[in-house]
Length: 150
Picture 1: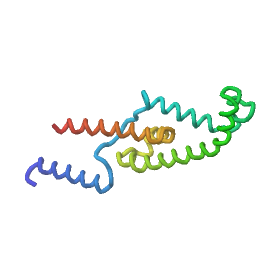
Picture 2: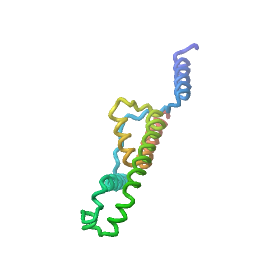
Picture 3: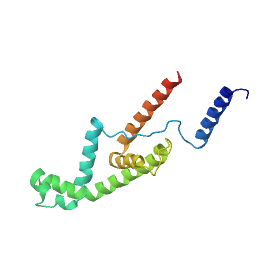
Picture 4: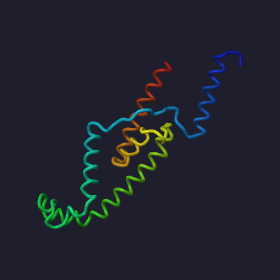
């Protein structure tokens, strides 16, 4: 190498190779994107479903769901409640674990930070919708980085 420019180019190339070897992206996420708009609506619906089906007794005869929404819906909900809540917790926990391993670590989000746990918690609630928000944020960062090169 005969100049600082060549040295810089080589360091940049080595950095890219190191990131590739570690299965890391050149995009580092340092912010949280809360659910807004339609994402906030689906967050509320899924949160309400988690809350509603967390207590089976709410669907018992004579309880609030039976009185407000009718006996048919209460009986149906009583029947599916253990299956639904188990399935929701299991699927959302698996989605969260996948997200932590394949999205957060790839984009250098440190597990010792609140940012990591904000993304993880909302992923547990929302599931795949949080993936979409995160991917949108990564795409925006990639566009910003591309603009800086020119």
